[in-house]
Image (cartoon, rainbow, N blue to C red):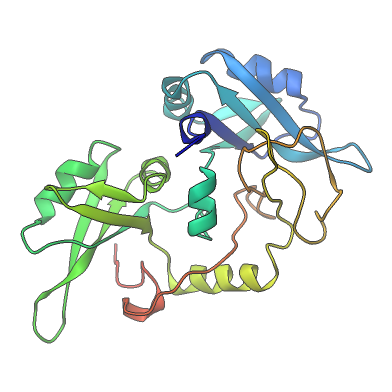
Length: 259
């Protein structure tokens, strides 16, 4: 998709010190590669930092290097780094910013075994467990599975592509969410992504959402970095949106995944 190749070269950086500037952010991350763009989001009225920003690199390998070298400390604070999510993924899968280590895989054919899923998804990271879901009464496959990783980054990489070719068949992937996480997503969707911000037309976030970060509350260039917002307690991405879970156990993709 147009612009997707550029989007995967970008990072969300959360938990920044309010004293961290764009110059500081650029200087820190240029150790991993060439910085194309860098921004720290500010309140347009107070001009104070909102505690998060975005960094665009020249190549995806530089983003991989940053993620492989976690954790990162800037201005005496450990910050959170996450891959920026492409616009088409944001639009089609609300709740995609939640930090999870579990992956839902749908559309699995009968000839796809646990080993096939493990081998394929091991290309993205360390697979801890694969669970093929069967019908409790008949014992037959239900056509979906869950994959657990030891880190959230492989899941973020995988869901940037909606379908993955496994044994010559397109399988759909999503983040596996619990019932509680789904409820949180539904609450966020009813609130119109309260506290969030939508993407602008360039490379950084635009303005939008409701209070306390509503229209006009952000300063700086309006670009297409992604619709993120620091979580109140853990500077993580905004939980928002919902999706149809009919046909899945317990209403949540991750409800039957035990570990």
